[in-house]
Image (tube, rainbow, N blue to C red; front, side, top):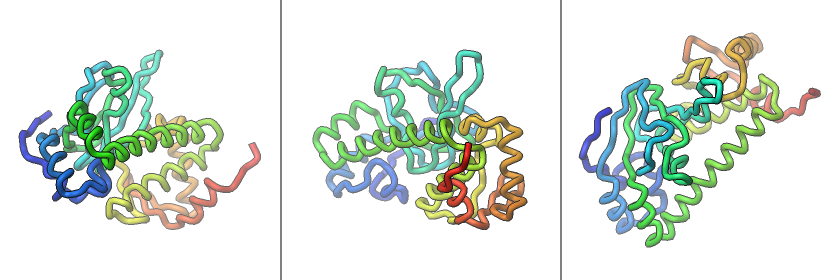
Length: 239
């Protein structure tokens, strides 16, 4: 993993409106720029941090894709989330000063390093930053609740439809297509996240293809009928 002491200017970053400095004025951005002075490059398949590592910083994903995962009691890796550019990694470490999960790069990636003690100090000074940090934490809680709902009450078709809709919505907010995406994660990793066996993930993808809802070529996915995916998620089914 490469660590670069290169100035990372939040004020000139094209992810500014998706990341930590959203809503800060010029003076506040300048102060934050002094705090975020390094960035790390993380090679595909390697860890940004691992469960048990001492918590020191939050990380803003500048490029690339990550998965977070925990090891279950029986030794399996359980995927707990997927993070993309403009999103924050490391919030899991705040509670006990040690990270509770692994953050693994799904492709070559780069993150901005935000020393938490300094971010916390700035948050006390700038209510805008404090509010946004709280907002990010709240978003994580809401996401966790959404996953619990997904795993607790949805059928396989609903789970995969909701996953694809969420993914393409987040990508669209970053300037990408509303209907095309490249899956950075494997079918197995999707299954781990959604609580589905690999065979069920593959079968559900095939079902969506047969019904003309999506087109799939390896990791490339074209959503041909977004309304159909929304209908699958929103229509109550007899269970």
